[in-house]
Length: 161
Ligand SMILES: CC(C)(COP(=O)(O)OP(=O)(O)OC[C@H]1O[C@@H](n2cnc3c(N)ncnc32)[C@H](O)[C@@H]1OP(=O)(O)O)[C@@H](O)C(=O)NCCC(=O)NCCS
Image (cartoon, rainbow, N blue to C red; front, side):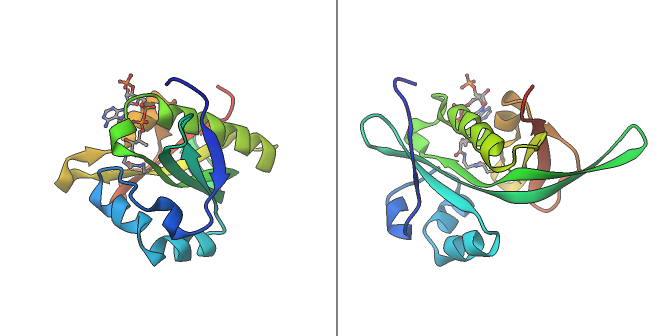
């Protein structure tokens, strides 16, 4: 990645006009009222990501959520900052933007959930379309906890690794 990314709040669906991450189900949501309804229902903070040339290269939304997992014979429950949506513009993928956004989300977790130990995500898995977001999250240090539920796998990572 060449320069710094600029993060600003999503104001309307028009902000996402023309953006495509190449995964049909995600692109459909990004351009539908369903997105705004989901953001409101889950009480998300949603951000646009522009590059140094002012080009829209990404979008993500985060909210507070509950992480539950079983380890060493015990159940653990944590209040976490969760990634509700994340997409990088197709033509800008594999340039480190997704990783930079995860680092930004870690910063936001420190701010919004100062005692939080983990961040989490339901990572998209679409076997019928031969698409998995899991390799990206694994590369960013996330591990999976549950077997797939429908089209996602629950994953988490420590804020400070
Ligand atoms: C997943 C996504 C956000 C990754 O964004 P990105 O900017 O391409 O990610 P990065 O460039 O930071 O990738 C970092 C590493 O993750 C791994 N990775 C990223 N995309 C991958 C893919 N499609 N297949 C395998 N590994 C991948 C690679 O190891 C990559 O490093 P490398 O390019 O040096 O090999 C982007 O592909 C996307 O928007 N996908 C569609 C929507 C989606 O799945 N969102 C997540 C929903 S939970």
